[in-house]
Image (tube, rainbow, N blue to C red; front, side, top):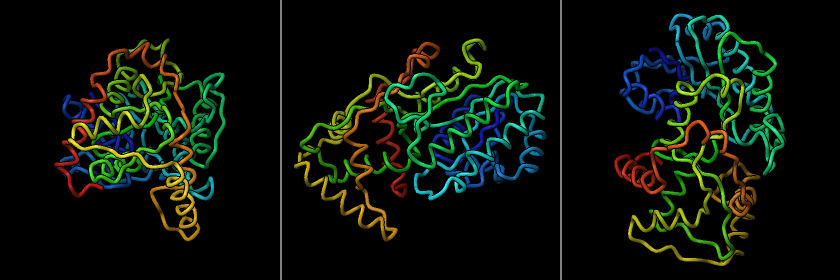
Length: 322
């Protein structure tokens, strides 16, 4: 069986490529970035999804049975919507190429929880974006829906706060801060959020892609993550317990001052671990509705503690990955 993974050189993509290679699939990773793992090189095609003709040619040549579309610009530093063309025109190019590839049976299009900043969206098309990244992903979802009917089955997934091996900021930084005794609890209670270990996300995507009847999938949105939601302090203590260390608590005003300092540095293009945006994120609870996901994928294979141990082992074996 053939599976195409766009963006397979990124964090989630690397884990996804690993998973399907281990399962014996014929895998193609389309990404303009080199894979993080040397053993993934034979399965990589260096290609920008903005290259419409190149994308069409490569996808038709590979003739995948299934597709996981992860390729996107995902940072929050863009200063205009045009900087996120991979998330808008790139989706348009993918739809066009997949229309012309009759082998394709089902596709997962990856969006983001940031398409709706409300705690309780009314429905799957209730949008409220707060940055250009979220806006670009909203447009990507709308392009997909407006292209119906399509000759293949599809679902939209919105990953929550995902972490695990091969991750990057912010949760890679979080682990390293705890490990380096540079993480502190704030005196004010931290927020409760939906987090997700990447191994469970892959299980959820795989179930949606292969093991869910079409009437439960067609065009629907699935948030990907673990439940119950939890406070970052609980998770930090869990990591600290595995390391045999204690996390001290410091006054909230220290975090506020650090955030103001980070805001000041940002004016000059200097990145700092704490800003007012980051502090607000840390202190605002946001729990995603995972009912639809758990109705089709009810048995995630990893507990948070198991994921934490796997991630700590990965960090120890990859000391250069920061």
